[in-house]
Image 1 (cartoon, helix red, strand yellow):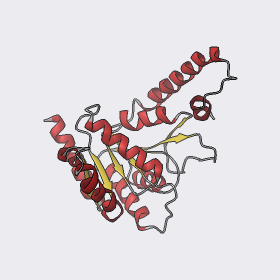
Image 2 (cartoon, rainbow, N blue to C red):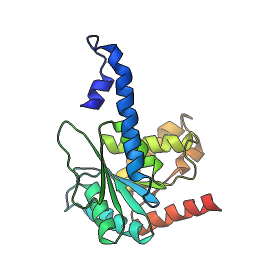
Image 3 (cartoon, rainbow, N blue to C red):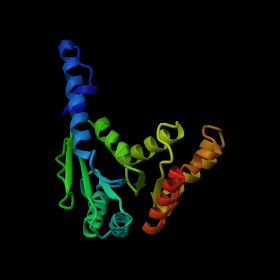
Image 4 (cartoon, rainbow, N blue to C red):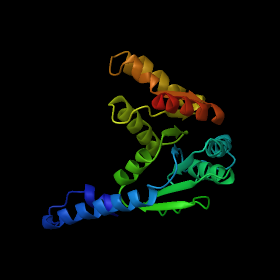
Length: 223
């Protein structure tokens, strides 16, 4: 796997071959840009691949995908099962464009059947660039390490001014409440962030509220 080979230092590796790896990385960026440059404005949706169809959040993610499509957004996900499949399904059923950015994993992950435009990536960081570059905002559902990584990377990019007027919505107030309490009681209390940093994200439970919040932020950007 390309990520594993890239990130593991091996003294036996022919270092002269490393520049060629850089060209392979560049080619993956080019392929991603070429595939996604023509999509309409979009929202990237993240969440657990382990979420089953009988989980209430699956239905919420499906409704979020539909609400996004009805508001004129394409939906970008990681293309896999769980929350990703739910959001793609809702978007497709509502007539929107469903995009899946799939990643090569040690355990095979196939694109879900609701993805209309699928792009395969070997490098996580290339794939993550596409999630940001071609989206107007993020909606983050309950998930594990990967979801938390995507959440905090987006918050860091906003905090550092690398992306401007970029709405971040955290869906599921019960799931995120412990994390938010910790951010306030520990991280903010020890002045590791500013009060305004905790305004970067919006927490809600209803898809319509999430889409309305995104619309309000984007309207301020264009004002």
